[in-house]
Length: 339
Ligand SMILES: Cc1cc2nc3c(=O)[nH]c(=O)nc-3n(C[C@H](O)[C@H](O)[C@H](O)COP(=O)(O)OP(=O)(O)OC[C@H]3O[C@@H](n4cnc5c(N)ncnc54)[C@H](O)[C@@H]3O)c2cc1C
Image 1 (cartoon, rainbow, N blue to C red):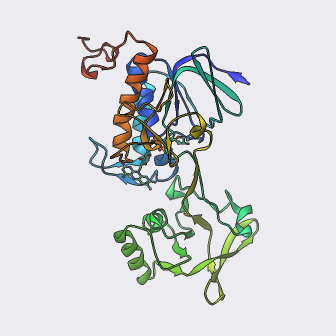
Image 2 (image 1 turned 45 degrees about the horizontal axis):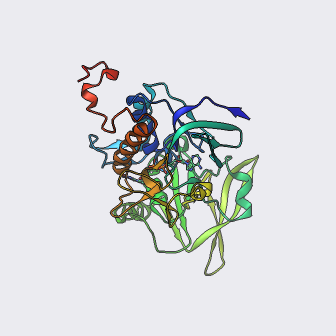
Image 3 (image 1 turned 120 degrees about the vertical axis):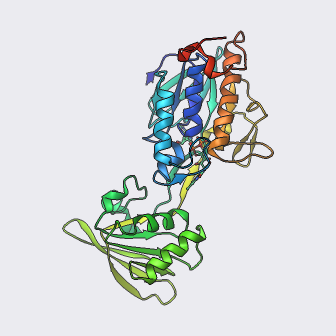
């Protein structure tokens, strides 16, 4: 097992909260590292909605989620602290004042821990039909990273929530055709987007099949050319031209081991004080993973909480360093006059 050097802080999670925590640790002169289970940084923004605009991050009238992640990476990257991806934390050890986070392959020791694990390690919910399984990654994709890759293709989107409708709307005019399939006629999506997709369907640019589900995948020469849909009421089936299936069925998240570390836990979330303390000395929690009265699960909240958590942790590791960071506009670390 690879063992890494001891750092001041280990941050679990490379979502917006963890990335800002990494920046903040660097600004405070602390050595830090991030561990994330996913193969890319950005948490929910990168994994679930990279192409959506976010409108409520201070300073950005609107910003694509993936662009916000790129900016956060640039901001955190100026201190050269490591981000270890594809490293899911599955264990914690503590000895002689050092915490060690354990993954399948590596051990990451540090003096304090910041948990910024969001909704846990998450994976997209898979289609339950056995016929779909062999086509994942070869025509069935549950994450859309580059919408242009579907230009000129027959795209079927399965689901009735925000993500399904957002992609149906965004791929309208990019894909050759859009077919949206949902098991009921109740949608859990923003009404304006539902209206836009239904309007497109009424103009023949898209098709919406309610009370239908996937019943077969039809392939020729190793690629999907059509799918079969079954009406769940009449049991009748129909064939739909299709190159690509995008199941947008939400995701399954797993807090796993994190809730078993002797922290204060309330309904799969970590209860924290106003200084982001978790009940276990040396471990702080910020962002979507924590809870307290009045908690808002927003990017902006995670930023504020990560600065509180990191400043507390830095003071805990180095008691001579003040909790209050001072103003970045004055800091020598940025080449400014330190006062
Ligand atoms: C469709 C959608 C739209 C949204 N729109 C907005 C919006 O407009 N404005 C807004 O403010 N918020 C929005 N949000 C909410 C926002 O995305 C979250 O509040 C934010 O992502 C929380 O950031 P985080 O860093 O705390 O957690 P996350 O983004 O969830 O990141 C946590 C990271 O921790 C990692 N992790 C978890 N467990 C482990 C483990 N055991 N080991 C290693 N890594 C682990 C995960 O892989 C993940 O990368 C939206 C959310 C969704 C789903």
